[in-house]
Structure formats: C-alpha cells, structure tokens
Length: 434
Image (cartoon, rainbow, N blue to C red):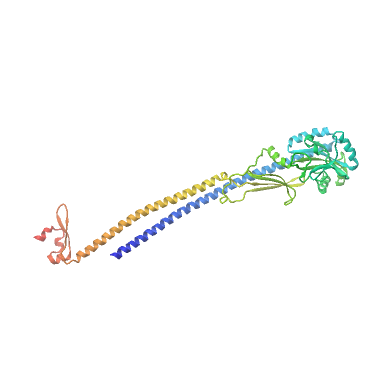
C-alpha cells in the first residue's frame, strides 16, 4: 500500500514538472514569435523610412547642384556679354562700361566685381599711370604679395584692372596687376588661344571684407576687327581681358537664396575647386544643425552622401553633400512599431503564462481529487478482501424508505447459517431470526 502511494506521488510530481516545462516553453515560444514578427515589421518600416529619406536627400542635393551650376553659368554668361561689348565696339568708355554691367550685377548679386583688364606693355606704364592719376590721385600699378597689395615689379607686360564695377566697393583693386600670380602661364595661354573663359584657383583679393578669398574668371579681348584665324593670330590681336570676380563664401549661399533653396539644416554641404583629391581646395562649407539622432544600435546604416562634378571655366569643381544621421522623429513609425510590438509580445507572453498557470491550478485540483478517489477505491478494495476472507459471518444491511434489506453476505455467512446468497440478498434481516 505504501509503495503504491509512493509511486502515485512520484508520477503525479513528474506530470506536474512536465506540464510546468510545457507551459514555460509555450510562454517562450509566444514571446519569440511576437518578437520575430516585431523585428520583421520594424526592419521593413525602417527600410521604407531610409529609402524615403535617401530619395528626399538625393533630390534636394541634386536641385542645389543644378542651382549652383546654373548660377555659375549665369555669371559666365554675364562675363561673355561684357566681352561681346568690347568685341563689337572699339574704344569702350568707362561710362559705357558702367551702364552696361549694371543689369548683370543686379542679376548676379553674388558677383564681387566685373572688370576690364588692360594688356599693358612696360613701355606704356608711365604714361598710363600719369593719365590715371588725373582721375585717381596717387594711382600706381600694384600687385599682390603675401596677401597684400604692393607696388608692381618691373616686368615686360602687365594685366591691369582698368575698368571696375562697382567701383566704390572695389576701389582697392583698381590698377592691380593680376598677371601676378592668379593664373599659371598654361591656363592663361589656353584662354588666349581658344577665346574661352578661364577660371583661377582661389586667390587672395585686394578688396572686400575678410576673408578675402575669391575666384577670377577671365575671357580674352582681341583688337576690334582683327582676323582670329588661329592661335597665333589671337595672341597677336590680344589687347586685354574681361573678368568677373566672385567670392565663393558668398556665391553659394546667395545662389541658393536666389533659387529659394536657402537653409540646409539637415546636411553637411561642401564645394571644392581644383583637381581630384588631395589637391582640391575647399571654397565653401556648411555644417548640418545637430539634432537628436536615432539610436545607432538600431539605425546603423551610414548617412547618405551625394557628389557631383562640374566644370567652371575649365576648372573642375565638386559639390558634395552628406546628410546628418536621421533623427528619432524621422523614424517615428518604425520606433513606434518596435515599441508596440515589444509591448504586445510581452503582454501575449504574460497572458499565456496566466492561462497556463490557471490551467495548471485546475489540473492540480483534478489530480488531487483523482488521487483521493484512487485511495478511497484502494481502501474499499482492501476492506472487501478482508470481509471476504473473514471466518465470521458478516452481513451488510441497507436501509431504504420502504424497509431494511440485506445487500451483502460473505462466504462465511453461507457456511455458518446455511442460507445461500440468493436466498438472503434483498430480504428483510428478520428472516435470520425466524
């Protein structure tokens, strides 16, 4: 009996342990499934958000690149118009030059100055300076050295800024010899031989507010009526150049402002001039405004970048833009889906845990009742065997509303009384006393 109870207890405990492990596995599986679906949804939404941000960034960067290219082309087109003035008329006066360039300056507010550069031989220097002193007392030819204007050295020829607009803001550059040192000999020679515009590298300007960094774009002016049949004829007919000076630090933001593109709070923007890296010279840069970036462990993709090369009067320029890391606001949908998915997964796992705990409680009660019934049954069987094997006559009498009746008699009763079970079962016990 004791061994039977012990075996039942062990089996019951094993069943409880198995059900507990099964319930724990169901909770873990529910949490795993919920988190897996959440991560898939999060990854999909994040990809959509990244694609949208990339497309938006590429479009905005491309529009700015087109605006910058158009603004520079407009500046060069204005220079070509001035050049045509000198090509179409002989002896353009300062008054005519002033009147002609005013609309060009108005259309290109990022222009520092427009000028006519006279090709002046050394033999004519004295006469030219004397004539200019009648209009500009103290005038003398100058050149830039170590970032400052100084009297020009003696050389065979000078390229002197003769006409200059607007004069008031650029008076310090009047009479400056720009053949020293903005252009290399090869660049200037290419412009003279082809008649095309040529751009300098960023140089130190004599005029304007700090920083005095500018770029000079020039076009050759040939003697009126000269036959320009080849490079040699062009060199022989050269009388000067027209030039436009731009300040890159003002050029880029003013072009963007004129195009309605002012403000780039979410991107780093940079414009470089010159040959490919590392020889490029930065001429403009703006940094993105810092913001609350999304967590990098969730959004690890590098910030999108954009680069475009274009030609500015024979000089390669490159525009590069890089978007700052996306902010949490820009990834609101995926972050919300992630948070909601985690919460729902946790709630689902908790719900399954509660249901499992309730089912376990019910099962334990059922197991307890079953064990009690088994024990009662075993007790009854044990009593029945004891009565059956007893040497004394034993009779069990059942009581009903109608009467008393014998419901059981053991074998010893038949042997001692002489009655068979068939004769006494269901009979009144009074027959035993008859």
